[in-house]
Each structure stands twice: as structure tokens, then as C-alpha cells.
Length: 204
Image 1 (cartoon, rainbow, N blue to C red):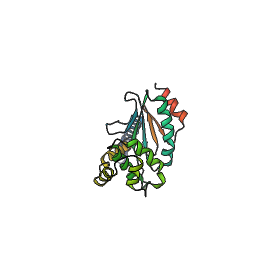
Image 2 (cartoon, rainbow, N blue to C red; image 1 turned 90 degrees about the vertical axis):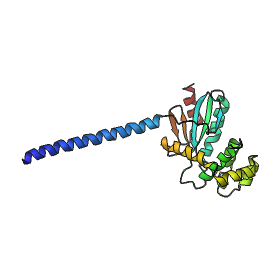
Image 3 (cartoon, rainbow, N blue to C red; image 1 turned 180 degrees about the vertical axis):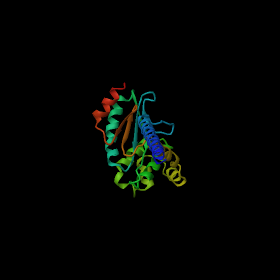
Image 4 (cartoon, rainbow, N blue to C red; image 1 turned 60 degrees about the vertical axis):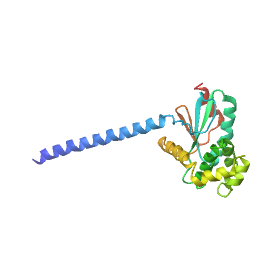
């Protein structure tokens, strides 16, 4: 009887181990599939360049110094490939950057006035002042309507768009910024211009 029980315990243990292995493999495959996907582009995403061009999707954070350093690189690429690519902006403010979320919402409120990219550049320019700079000053420098910007921030007008972008960053397992997608290829951290140009040229 004892040998019989040991025999069945061995079978059950083996079956349990097999189930765990199958589950682990399925989780790994699911994560790999998620990582290989291209982020969704929505009508709320700020864009520059050709609407039918190759998508360069950047997840960024206004308080991130590496994101700031990537801006001129992306602008240089866009200038040379403006008929072939489209730059798509995605918010991914890190929890470790307490000023980043407010900055993201300010930019989205400026988006309502068609001033997103002006505010985008200004917020990166004023990166060290994000926690203290007044909305009226930002509006003035971005040539935006200060009262409308203030109203949008008071009512949380930019919050939903930032939330949607952050949700997309989580879906794509973006844990660091900047993270750039060119097609289904992912680049994490500050990228050299030649690296991005090679990836673009390989897809055009």
C-alpha cells in the first residue's frame, strides 16, 4: 500500500511540475508578444510629420534629462525624413519625478489650443523649474491663452489623455524613458542619432 501511495504521489508531483512549466512558458510568451507589439496610435496623440509615414513613437517624461537630450535628435531626424516618418508623442511620467505629471497635463491642455509642441519644447527648456514656474508665464512664452490654460488645469482637462497614454505605456511594459518604437523595434534610454537613422532606413 505504501509503495502504491508513493507511486501516485510521484505521478501527481510530476503533473504539478508540468503544469507550472506550461504556465511559466505561457507567461513568458505573452510578455514577449506584448513587447513585440507596436503601441497604439490614437487621435489624441500629438504628432509631427507625414500621416502616412513610418511611425516613430516616443514615450517620454518632461522631468527626464535623457528625454530632454533626445528631443534635438528626434527633431534632426524629422527634418530629414519629414515626408517619410511621423513622430508620435506619448506621456510616460515616472513616479520618481514628482513634477512630471503636472507638466504632462499642462502640455495636453496647451494641445487644446493647438500649442502642444510649443509647450512641449518650453517645458523641456524649463525642466529645472517645472515645480515652480507659473502657468501664466508658460502660457505667455508658448503664446497660449493663459485663462484657458488655467481653466483646463483646474478642471483636469488634460488628465484623461495623460491617463490613456500612461495606460498604453504600462501595456507596452515601458519602465524607463525615453522609450522609442520604430515599427516593432524598441529602443530604451537615450539613443544616438545614427542608431535611430539606421532603424528608419531599414524600414523605408
